[in-house]
Image 1 (spheres, one colour):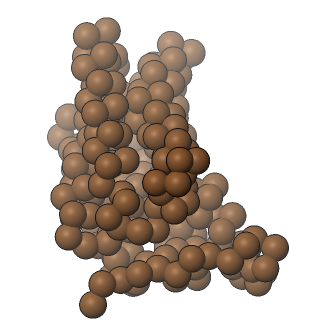
Image 2 (cartoon, rainbow, N blue to C red):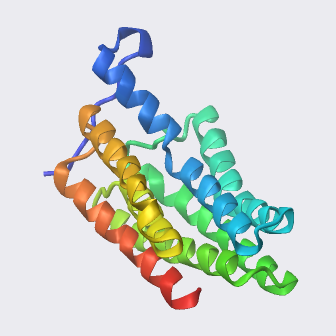
Length: 205
């Protein structure tokens, strides 16, 4: 049976639980986590404003451009909403985002970006490709893929002090379940898929 997440009610009509879940889903959306992670790793790579600039450059191609693609799609009526709840609608935005990330990788390589920033953007490419391949035939949670990968990468970079970041993934998982946007299996698969990005980062950094 094909999984079809329900259309969310208007925010004003949501229960307090649904409102909390929608806020968490929006604030901890994949593109937002991608931008935040790149800025943090960028700063950490040089502990200076230069590193933050590298992170910002990566965030432009990995987060800002993909957000723009989705916003444009929603405005044109080609996409249901910013989270693209209909699986078949995800393929084109993900494919275009893939091209943006590849462009970012190329530019970062040519300009000589710090190793950690470059490794992170390549890891995001691997995560995106993995998600796209799964999405062709099954609806996986991209929210959990990015959240899971983010937590794993933070643990690799900062060690035990980063473990509280696991609350981010837990909050994302709860929000997606509360909104009936995904099944538990889709959330677990998304988390596992985030491991491909973390493994790539570990190998390259």
